[in-house]
Image (cartoon, rainbow, N blue to C red; front, side, top):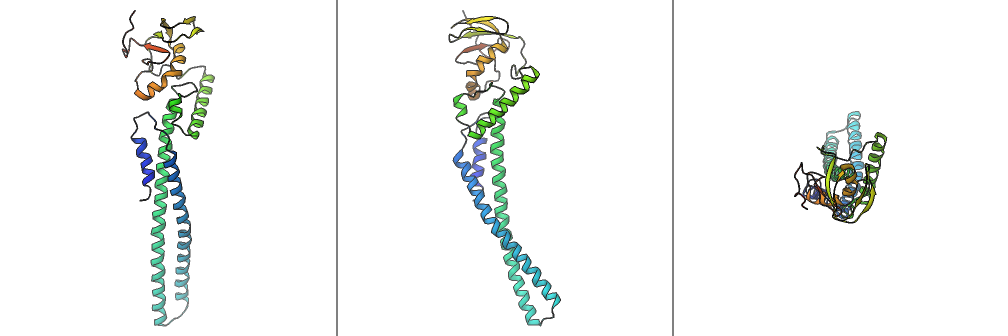
Length: 253
């Protein structure tokens, strides 16, 4: 059945959780492209045959109108025209099947690529420039380049505005959040202070300062368990607590 493989691609994407990506199916994608090439190879000669049949029918009708022929010759000519019309319709239907299958394959491929691109664009708002390895390995080489270009464009735009648009996707009630450091990071220069981010230290940091550490390691958790708030993330570097949203347990000690 034509276009079945293309339909499988779309179903594969639709079966994923919203906002998640499965590994790019290179094999199935290549098979659909190969099927498209096969349809094109069948379609081109059929179109030439259709044109030939139409030209022969026109010539036949013109000669019958211009020449005086006997009744037997007229019946013979009509029989020949019926044969040409039958062959023409057969080729037309064949060409239509290949054309519609080609169009369906094209639409399924475009839907697969476009919907994956939408998810990739959304990732550009969650990380600065580098994807976690477990997500990057699911992308094709073209998608990796697309993500790189999208992030570069986004960062260039934010640089012109001098505004970090990817911070606080949910409007915060407080510019500071309470964090606990899970690894020894050492002294870092933040926007309003020089802080010693020692292991198990609990402190209040500006959201904009904490975000750069959270997004480096926490995106894979957002991707897999789809938390609603980026401030309520368990990462390898920080446990971030937002008391207003109440998304995690309150720190003790």
